Image 1 (cartoon, helix red, strand yellow):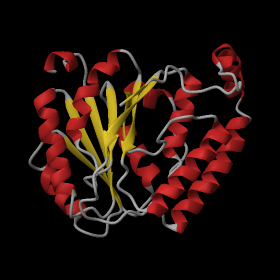
Image 2: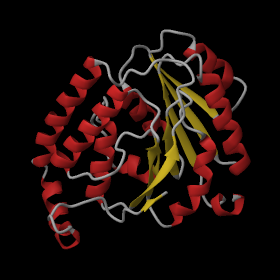
Image 3: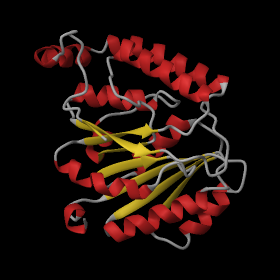
Length: 265
């Protein structure tokens, strides 16, 4: 596998909020695993206003490993804001992101590196999602809204295990700062003509900490961003030009979809 990925460099971005129970194990695993695959990599952890020992633990780890960079938000700015801070700080050929709560195994990334010679992005979907029924219901409803309003058709919009060409984040400015961040990325990825494929990844039970995605304030912010930016992007002239270019590739319904999507188990 080392020969397969020797051509590239990688930025790994991990947002973190009150993850003292899992952060050391997660970050240590990511650092150790990436070091066995490549030499040119960086791990960027964004401490999004944690009120526990997350920041302290991260600073200690950063002092021991030069590949680790820590960004601190003085106050909690939201999931999307944490990812944007990490993306803006990244500087490698590819940018990968995952949550820091221990629900994904970094080793699952290795077998999909060869796909990056064929696609600009690899989007994972969770196999047997290990979340509460409420989070699953919210996710299904959000996915349906995203399909209806933005025409983005993927199996798991908000799966926090994705890899993109780094040039995408340097070319396109991200505007959302809440739970809409993945929708924005996928919408702009499609509009820009990037190719991607979908693959399944195992989802593990949380290794401590507390999920915040189902909080009413988080959901309300997502709805506000969804309708605000749907209206804004609908009047973006670049969108109209792009959709005219896509007409020949639209499905029978006439709706544009992500370019070059292929699903793999």
